[in-house]
Image (cartoon, rainbow, N blue to C red; front, side, top):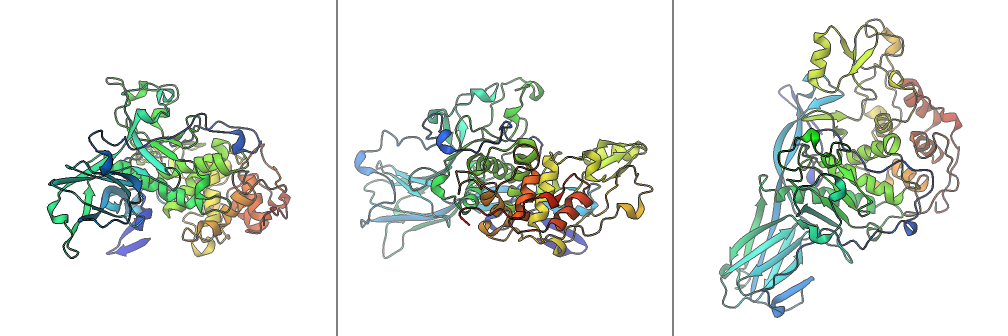
Length: 553
């Protein structure tokens, strides 16, 4: 959404309703721990959980609760009680706003955000009432954020309601977000999948029982109970809500139901770094503990969001991004190569789910625009070197006499095996095409400099592909049709026998574009104008399959 007021332009990205994206501390290294694999389709029957996974769950009921006062079934029974208490929990979180974005030296590629707190209702979480009488009553907060308890306390004055960062499902929990309980670790391998090694985030609110007595309907409404930004529990509920949003997105796709989605367990824990150890020396070989990462070798739903040294607890893009790797692992025809397919797709899907083309990127408090089909670099008089990712690097370029600019994609590499190019191309398959003009159409072609390129470097409105936009239901998006019906695997509707692996072995952008063409979503000429002409990359749309029906079409 773009708003103009008094010549100040404010871009609000991902801050609409419950799909708000946040950026508190923005740092690099958001990636998947998945290795590159061959072209064998994934069959969930051949990839079982390595052990039974309960994951991050609420602790057992206290020993002090008598069995007659324990209600542990989430729904309760239709019994007439004397007291009732109701309310809502909300958590505070950070939203990144792009204010005066055009003034950034990196615009329109990158811009700096200004963080501001907002609040969102806790929904679909486990909530428990306890009182001095020994009651322990478990319920689930509704999808609208409401909770209520009816019970009959006798002779006790104080009650407490606690909400936990666990989202229950019909047969199993959907999501759990928790903290590691066993102190510092040196590598990711030391983190386990044992339920007893973690505890979810929680927040409690105490209340007087007397006002909760039902007297003609005058029971106790606690209103909105706020989990403040400075309470670590706000992070747990923010992460859980983002993952629930992503999970709902994927479960709406053809062939994927909520019952097919294994529980997602997210670990976000402060204090994993040993005391006295510098960040550069911690987990020095892999740096997995300083990265947002999906680790299916622990369990198929295991996601790690770092806190120490690279705090991504307030970064909605990181949370939703990692769920895309989870989707890829479970539902594509093969586990895709991280660099040339998986990472780019994760960035695009996160942007679609958050309804924003701006994603977190290299550099503190910076975001990157997916709708720019290039990267900025410094022309030093003879070549493009180095790449420019931050305002300080921009200043270093100009102070040294260089010229910042946007070389054509082919200047970096002629091949398509790049997560950076994948996400920019696929975003152009989603956005509105000519109805949403490209923010950058001038790219310096090979063997030219910024000083003398002229009209040869102007490509005009090269995106002629009218996508459905981010407001379209997920099941109606063309890219999801391709992911399920052309590139999908046995976990969804089964593989497509008409799939042709025309590019590099395994999934890549060639396969994705071929699927868009053979499924009838774009023309070969539109694909060529975008990828081969404007970006200069080695892609020939004319060689794509002309038709690729799926058996379940």
